Image (tube, rainbow, N blue to C red; front, side, top):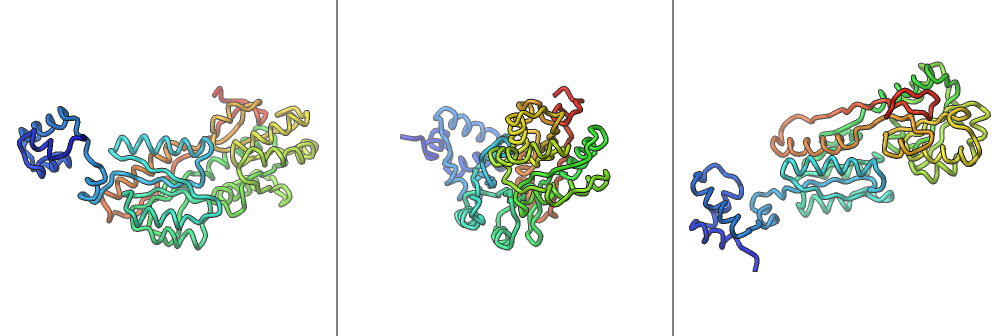
Length: 339
């Protein structure tokens, strides 16, 4: 039979409440008693029931992380950073995703109503009225990743995407001689697409390059759809001497492979750049010029904000802005970084 808290109390010759106080690290237990209880716990191999303990403390020491998807390195790196930091701070991570056709209300209601977690970090791909209403109902500590939801109380972790896009476009125009540009992003209502397209248009204008509406394409951030688009467009793009900015590395890889299949020389006939600096950026041939996004740090920072909010529920809302960084490789025509 599993060892109970009563077994520990009997072995240490103390009450159950004393064992409980030691488990919860309360300072009112004197050192000699604490050491005796800790010794009994170790000798008997006692493992506390975390759910019963959570009910008593009104803390589960579990944090929730809700992402738009669990596929791909972008999300796995966020999870890795969040999980590592949670463990360092004495928490466990519960991870889920929100389907594309779900506004998240059912999941968020379940998390909030069942008190399974102490706080939740959420990345939303689109912010609409339903999303705002859902998040407004969350009474737990809340962190929004990669965006902000006006009218909802939350802390946030965002990426300075504009700086990264501006650096990338400046490099393309000033160092690679780009005179025509194509943008390939996600859906027009997607949070990242809105931010990256606005930064792309602004940086292009500053560099003296005009963008035609016909040169803006909205896909879904996946390799396959970008490859399909590339099969239809790469020869035309090469004839027009354009440079292609894909709003993530996966789509950039799809366009590169379509261009290679079409017999084009890259980057000579078609420079292509991406965004995020996932592992795929170093696997394409030519290797991909891109913008590094600190994905792991995003997850870790979200966990830190949740823990800070749990310690001080009344503190002002906090926004952490993480910096992006231009990584120059061969796909743009000018190679500078050895990485």
